[in-house]
Image (cartoon, rainbow, N blue to C red; front, side, top):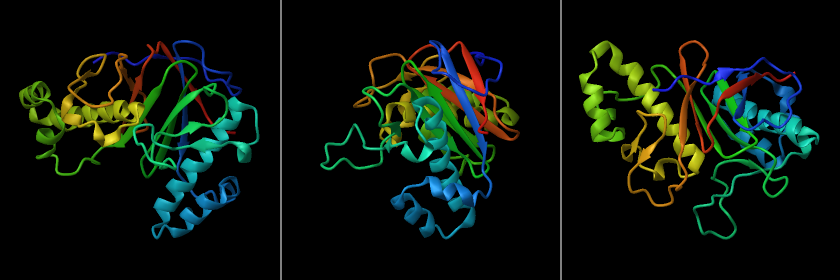
Amino acid sequence: MPEAPAPAPEDTRPAIPAPGECHLWHIPVRPRPDWLTLLDEEERASAARFTRTRAREVFLTSRAAQRLVGAHYLGVPPTAVTVRRDCAHCATEPPVPHGRPRFAHGTPPPVDYSVSHTEEHLLIAVTGHGVVGVDIEARGSLRDADALPAAVLTPAEREHYTALPARERPDWLLTAWTRKEAAMKLTGLGLRAAPRHLDVRGPQVTAGPIPGWPDTPIHLYPLPAPEAHTAALASTTPITATRPHTLP
């Protein structure tokens, strides 16, 4: 698998990412009740419906952080950031809000972004050129690891997986799944793009016959991740550098 793009020095005042550059925002999940004011009325109602405290904190962190990050690039207050989630692959009227998120500012918006989370960490990847997808997973998060390879790996990937020493298989499987998730999120297809038709062993995705899959190459990169986590980036343009950012 290819090496991760070289980290660039941290910058507290991000401009639009340069060609070949991806900005990475890492936000730990923790109680932030003051961020509730950044959500719109519908989001606050959704947050109130969560019965698990941790799930509510993840939702709040994700929705508020997207507005805070968007404010940096769009030059508007966080409460003025509008995020669209209508699905480009569904012909419903009105559009159903289950697609990949994007800022509804400009045509096209000045940046593209993708967001992923575990119960402990949120990761937002931002690019000014092309389309991105990001995924972060906690080690041990994959359920039914014995049956999973047959369900999510291509025949060639399964052959590679079974040839590995047993101790290396869990980490390899998690890495492969994270790369597939990043690519599926980039396209907005999600699990409609059957992961068993995506070979992610190389620097680009090799996709089987998947309706709606883009013609453009999708590049894959490993990302630095918090302890006991794995992260991956997918991009329609080659990424040569990542730049870490933190919220004030």
